[in-house]
Image (cartoon, rainbow, N blue to C red; front, side, top):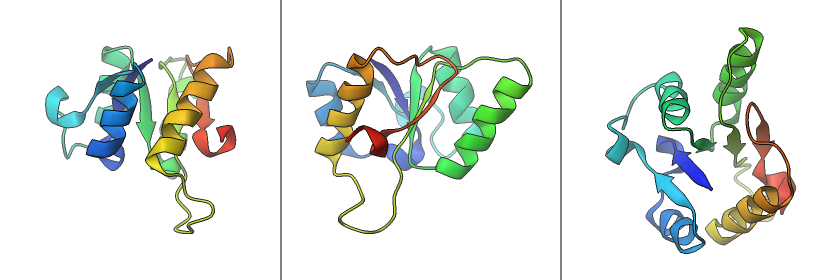
Length: 120
């Protein structure tokens, strides 16, 4: 899967695990978008045709709704929810497993908003 990780999702261990699992990962430091606003990250994921992975549920849910409401499209948004509770938060390995499950499920990605915590 082609992924774009926003600033909130950049974690070297996660990137290594995703890459080892066969995913093509682009990060803001390489894309020239480090430290930019969320809308810039979504635009870069659209420009590069990569599903965006974020931990920022609220802002990207709003951007997702705005894009679809205005008749636009995006390659998909994958969200990792953080509750700051060890039994509910996902480890990097759990995130990679959830990406594999949603990827292999046949679920659509274009214009979708998937919460990876539901794919454990």
